Length: 297
Image (cartoon, rainbow, N blue to C red):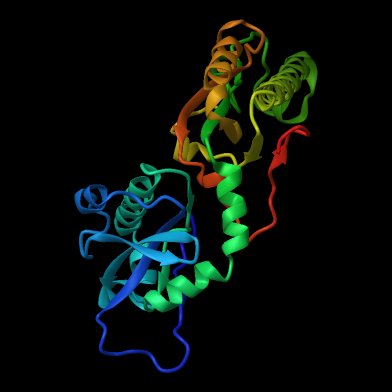
């Protein structure tokens, strides 16, 4: 999701009488029911969710206070971790409400318009592309898979040397004498072991990805998360998303289970979650990095 607000200015002078701007959550062909809209709280500061018609498509939106959600105010909020999380959760609730009624194209977080007319025009101007994307995402969901190096196969940098015969003082520093040579030999062996372990884990992560792609319509990779984000000592080697036909859930889940339990990939640990709304595959503005099966429609 974008961290920067995409405020679309109205043509001509801004209507200063309106205290609100329009936050857009998702595009769909099948608007959610009135009950769903009423029962969903997106941004607590805003009004109820509502549906805005735009040609053959619908836009699920919410009126939010301009004083809190205009470009300057929102930029400040999105630079505050707590406020950023609240905005992201509110946006997801709005997208989820739309998704209950059918296929959606989730819009980037902080997609804002200065009025219904601008919002409807923005959707109508890209109606053909949005309709094609809705067709592509229909009856499909996203599965997230993260592959880490196995903890037991991740030699620590600078691990203590417990061998005997290690020299001290100038012996270690210069490699002089039997003790120094033995120390340098063990240090070199540890470096090779680290490289070998990482190479094996990377190869297994690639094999996991290749097998899962056989059960998916499309796949895309995100940047691996840092150890600070994952809370794990072992590095994350693969952070991927897979677009899976709803009819193939069982096959995809079985493949995940098989990969994780058949003992063929001892150098990695695999975590998966899903099904999710296909955020990773709802891209219009950037060149697609997805790879698809040749037989995919």
